[in-house]
Amino acid sequence: MSKKVYTTNKGAPVTNDQASITTGKKEGYTMMEDSHLMEKLAHFGRERIPERVVHAKGAGAHGYFEVTNDLSKYTRADFLSEVGKKTEVLVRFSTVGGERGSADSARDPRGFATKFYTEEGNYDIVGNNIPIFFIRDAIKFPDFIHTQKRHPTTNLPDANMFWDFMSLTPETLHQATFLFTDRGTPQDYRHMDGFSSHTYLWYNEKEEFIWVKYHFKSTVGNETLTADEATKIGGENPNHATEDLYLAIEEGNYPQWDVYVQLMTNDEAKEYKFDPFDVTKVWYHGDYPLIPLGKLVLNRNPVNYFNEIEQAAFAPSNFVPGIGPSPDKLLQGRLFSYEDTQRHRLGPNHHQIPVNRPKNAKINTYQMDGPMNVDDTGENPYPNYYPNTFGGAEPDESFKLPEMEVQAVIDRHTRPTEDVDFVQTGEFYRRVLDDVNKDHLISNILGHICDANENIQYRQCALFYKADPDYGTRIGEGLNLDISKIKELSEMSQEERVKATLK
Ligand code: NDP
Image 1: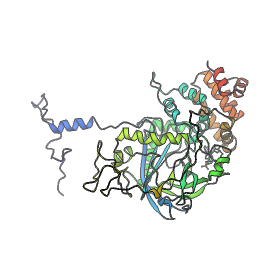
Image 2: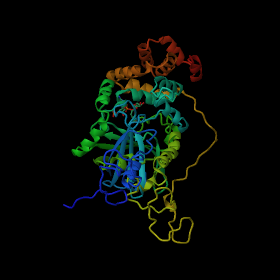
Image 3: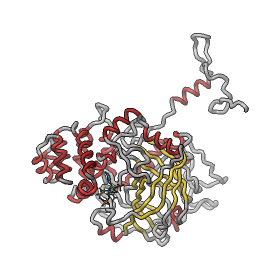
Image 4: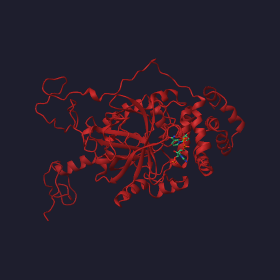
């Protein structure tokens, strides 16, 4: 076997990698001319790229999506066009608030981002393991995330920041309740469901459209950790979910999800009892049953984690013909911010990194040049402007989104909390959670909110109480609060409640 020669980054042979070029056998001045040493140290100092502000800790794998049910009358998306059609995918799972080295077992939503390498371009569903989100307007997103991170002075996670924001933003209650059940600490990435959370648009060749939500149901079911188990695992093996995903795939035990959709017509959307574009709410299964669509299988581990997972760039703005956005205000902000953060993290040409490159579609773009551009335009000379008469690529109107009629009053429309905002949390608490799940929810919340100031505890307990009196009472009792005061606060408007609990 011929020896593999170690080279510099430019391909020249390295003659010695154990000794710098110096002036002496023992002590010695190091020579600037040691270009291998300079290259090695300089590259080392640049090995990190900016960590994601959210979803920094993650794991991922490659696989495929296969259509199992023909819903092509609703969408012209080619990758959904026939039963049996398979599309390569990349999936990245993550926690949300922690840094890149944080524990996989943290109480946190889990990111569930899927890139479909379709023949019509890359399509990303950038979802979570929880079907709803804390807030419904993107302008609140940076504030919300700050409250999940470290306090600017102490550099510590802070229960006051967390519960102050939650209690001042009642729309967070539904997801906060999910988060403090044991589903906030899934056993690993295989034993959890995924959701698009947002509502999206599907449209067909006749430009007829329908609203859609995606659900990914794990074929091995939802398994969770108790708070004690999560703490223990976090200490013993902070990478347990990363390891589980990698080993399962290595052993041929491929993680799999059945993929379903809920579909709602535009007429139904106008009449539904909840705003169907409000991401803090679900569409009840009883009203909109899950319709099978396909299956998602992960069967190949990355060979180079940094290249294939750390540099993976997901953005909900990556659509293909047949699929588009909805007027969900959180989604509308994400359509900008995800792609924007990738430009910051990886540069304006991040789509040329192999894992982000459309594998099964051809790029014919006039966006050229910029840092790290490695693309060959393919033709010489190729115009870099449009329109042109040199045979450059042409837009194709036949793929366009359907016309959408909108009546608009342009304003910063604030959305006060309404009683309807508490209905689904109440249903979840009463109808979905059994006694054991309720007990765990209560003790998980108490273990966290106990560190918040009393006025904040009162304000938050009033919200629990509004969703369900038993819920508010049990948390209030656990904190030794006055239940009649909680009840009184729960009957106030949010504005009055905030005034009454400033101190
Ligand atoms: P259903 O009563 O038909 O089903 C209950 C849903 O709750 C199932 O999806 C179930 O998931 C999920 N669930 C069960 N236990 C837990 C738990 N401990 N933590 C989190 N989720 C759990 O739902 P409805 O559509 O009638 O909605 C009732 C309430 O259920 C909603 O207000 C919402 O809070 C919640 N929910 C609804 C979902 C939806 O998309 N409609 C999705 C998830 C929750 P599984 O079957 O995997 O156990």
